Image 1 (tube, rainbow, N blue to C red):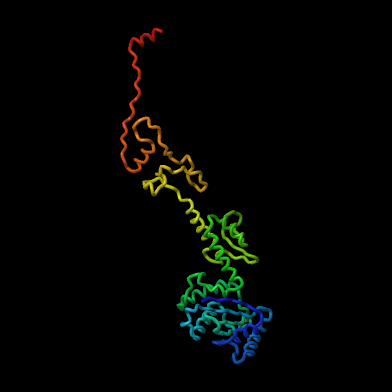
Image 2: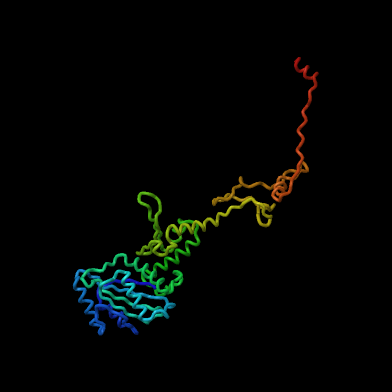
Length: 334
């Protein structure tokens, strides 16, 4: 279940759209006559005159469900949910009209209400969009309606305006972020697509607190497009991707086929800007001159890794010349 909130100036146009639609059915109303369309419009306009300073007096909400909920949504059930929705949205003590449409696969209705209540006071519209999201989710869970798995299941062909742009940004950012290794790279790649990345910094510091994206004249917070596109979630995902390109080569007891360190014809790696090895980190495997029968340095390394004991007799110390007493005496007499 989702709700789309609209506010307008004239009741006549809104009511004609809702009631004149093919197969439209008035399910319920309060404080107005429904025998004729002209009476309905007149009753709404009569009450708005008690607060003439309020120009945008027309409240219009479209409530829509998944086609999976069709079997649950009798007219009585839709009225029950719509009235519960009005109560939770704090749209109380005012005129309203509930009209069901049958012109699409998704069951939906139109809720028209007077923002001038029965006492002439204004029904505020601040925080309505955020409250609408929470109320729709709560009612979906409470009544056992179909809960969408995510943005991938939305029928994007029916989206218009900012909703359509949000989904375009969502797909562009998701695809691009899966191919980069840093936030700077993401910023550059998105710029090529006409999307600007903006950072929000903590006051007086260089600490990043949030992120937003803009295209043309529209700008949205990352979390407003999707929770996965908040700065914390997006930077974490990109850092994890970057780490896959920095896998170190460990010197351990693997076979020659599994680890190139043990291949005799393996070339020494060049300097690696991503934290790899330079030439000073590599153990040379060139064979030493065969002056003796002892194994070369390369053979000793391989045998040690393979767990083979090496017993090499120590080289004898060089013999020192022994001087006899006569020689020593001659040297002292000099």
